[in-house]
Length: 336
Image 1 (cartoon, rainbow, N blue to C red):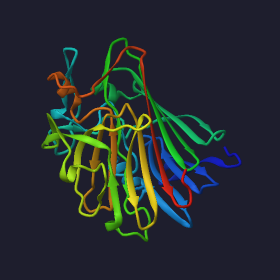
Image 2 (image 1 turned 45 degrees about the horizontal axis):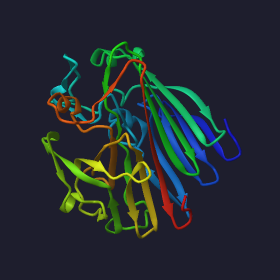
Image 3 (image 1 turned 30 degrees about the vertical axis):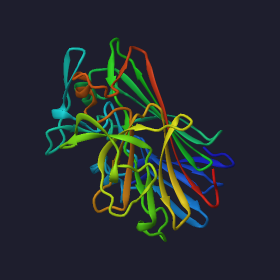
Image 4 (image 1 turned 90 degrees about the vertical axis):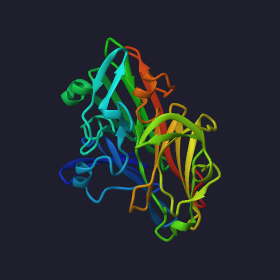
């Protein structure tokens, strides 16, 4: 499975099948584990002579299996984040999700730890892997979310850019509610020789959702003070677990940036116009930040039922949702 510049290789790590996408020229690689939620759990590239971790990996894959929301790039579907008390109404019917351990709410959706199957691999135009999950093969999903769907995700590593294209098809004969998001963990600082104090965070959000016990109240406010990251703020001391909205788009995408000024490197996450919300999360006791593009806020189905515009997506039978996210670095050695 190789070409002159790009390769995709399969190995066994900690008892799991891992697919490694490589851009040999740019010394970049991404590792995907389809059987654990199709998590792209590691993305790194060499800048100058230094290997740079972009997406932070777990200590090992057994740790990822035990805590699939805690490392790499978890996939959140059919809803990102929490659902209040695990219950919501849609078109007059009530649906109930299992609650998280020691929590009154459900969280992180239903596919985060589920196996996907590998559909195709290519090295013709980048290192590419496409994986699918069909709900009919997952009784635990159907028990909680009785809608037939197919979730297809394509990761492509090309010119050291990691692109994630997602397609979600409603295979039911009735409407399907949904929201979608990802939960990637990014390293700070980007270079091991840099200081956290000299890393700045840029987020193009103009508003944020008020939260009460991690759930939106329905009120939205203009960003100000520590919540205004449009012109950048130092990462040192930053503490967030918040839902932002009204993202400014440039050429159809929003851009969140980590600016490692000591190293002269920027990490950029681009998300298309489908992603109207963004969660910023700073994991405690870890040198990391999460930029989480969402199509809707936390508890969107319940907000929508109250008449609040929460961006809940209703897919009609045979309708397909499609989105695109791209992650890459800019530096003094390579601008693209």
